[in-house]
Length: 229
Image (cartoon, rainbow, N blue to C red; front, side, top):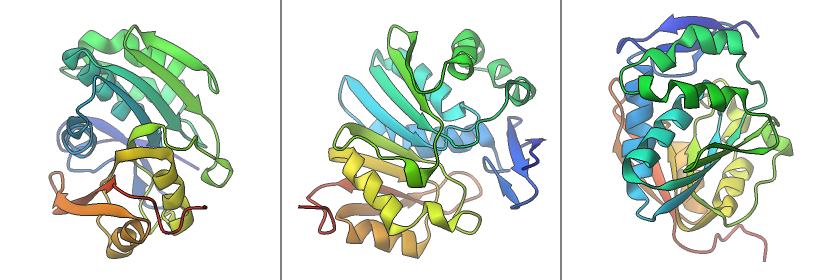
């Protein structure tokens, strides 16, 4: 698919895919969306000294680098797994210029390491952050069960990729989380919320990032009625 670099309203860049009319981030602001959805609404809810994170849609690496920075600022250890079937190229990474954004500049070397890291291997980005990138389609992905404290669900929206939002996929996310683990997504569609609830998640509608009224946060609080026994 053809991908175009665009500039969003907060000055940070993103990628647009004309074929499916989808952006990797909100046009209201890529950086501010990622900070709101994944750091403020997800990361900040995890109160342990280490955090095991699964990201669905590794994409531009923006969520990973702001999580690395949050971990460094709070002296937390992070084990980060990112899934992506169609990784961005290094040429696209250079055009995004995330390592030139205020706040990310001191971590520009780490940002480059995120993208240069080999796939299917656990790589130490710094002494507090390890990364495993998995190049695989969701239908082939079988996450380890009960090990993640936090899921960043950053797939393209249900209109563009309905197959990423099925109850079968959300079941994988439920199973991957530890008890009290948190699932966050920018999406607030009613059928997604109902599917999460049917799996045993406690689901909240919370304020979304600029340009979006609501988003979803869900917590695994009990055995799923749909899980295998």
